[in-house]
Length: 396
Image (cartoon, rainbow, N blue to C red; front, side):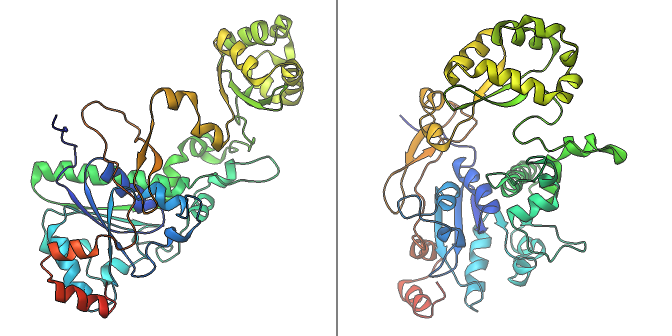
């Protein structure tokens, strides 16, 4: 049986990328069928390769964001690199880069330069703060953008702010870059012309802060930091159970509050308690209500509490650790884990969100550093002797 074509089959993406934002974007493009040529520094590669060794000697971030790519090592500062880049640009449909501010332009990879050679190319430049403005030269890492974008001001406990446990600023930038590239390819299909998209990590983070921004509109107080609980709705957050675990539950309206009192807490009189007569009053009396809920849950396991919540139609979830996720019954039942190759053999991977029967996602191996250098250079017209010279001169 012939495999159905993927949406981006035949699309070539050239990426000068490191860390998370750009690699996350291009990995999703590869999932959709695109050929992604990843340029890496000879001998070192994407510095995310060295973040840790948790996946059988490979770095967790790198394994996550780099499947299905081809690795070409190239010293971008070497004089011979310009010709190689020119040949790559001529073949590319998309160029994605998140180098230091201004670096791509200095390499002759500005949109103006590459579009003069390839009018249909879609360029996506990812940076911390954008091309202009007083912050344009500032370095930008995920945690710094979480801080600069206001995320830390609304996340954590009342006493101390907390960062997100995953790279949300990088992920946000990667997803908006993906969205931009897809829009550019659709537009090119209509007009025949490429386009440039500029993605700022700060602007992506601030876009995600829309609710607290509007909550604090015109000088109003921002949402208070409330740990893992909802800042303004209660009870909506984590509660301990008798087996030492934690359940997350959330009430959205007065009907659910009555059901919670009657069928979960088995204390129907609470519905008439003036301390808890509205969400605003329940939120103001959090400590008192939390003690009541904790006492009610203290003799039950997390599974028993969740079963009671489900029976009452109250939204809930387990507060899971990473080991729980690998074995999660819902993910297992839906077959959401697959295997992919890597330099150290097969490793598990989560299938891309957005399940479809229209085609199979691409799940090719995570590349070894420089694994595809010779093949790509040969494709670009370099002979064996020329490739060996480039290698001796440490250009590749």
